[in-house]
Figure 1 (cartoon, rainbow, N blue to C red):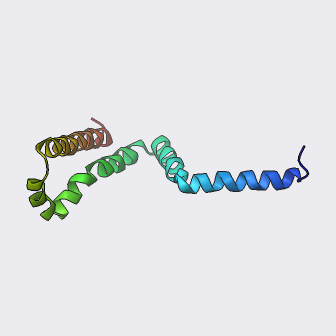
Figure 2 (cartoon, rainbow, N blue to C red):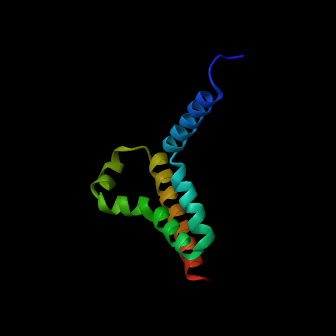
Figure 3 (tube, one colour):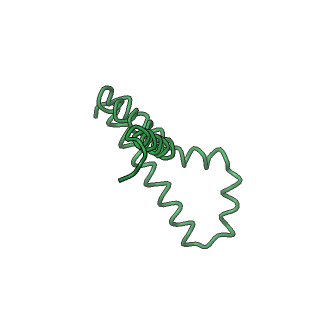
Length: 100
């Protein structure tokens, strides 16, 4: 048995859980869950935007495209496939947001 109070142990445990929630951004998960359950169309639209962000970043930083010439072909193909797949998923989420 430990000599510390139960309340001190509870406080330490609560602090540890709070730090883990802050570390892994659990509030975003709770907010997304709340949004998805109450306003699903808005949740799908936001998920569409987040899925399309890699393409938007690449368009904004167009000088990165020139740097792909120095990379291996396999890496460029993999990156292109990842961009295409995130774009397809963004379109899927957007159509769900519109109700199709």
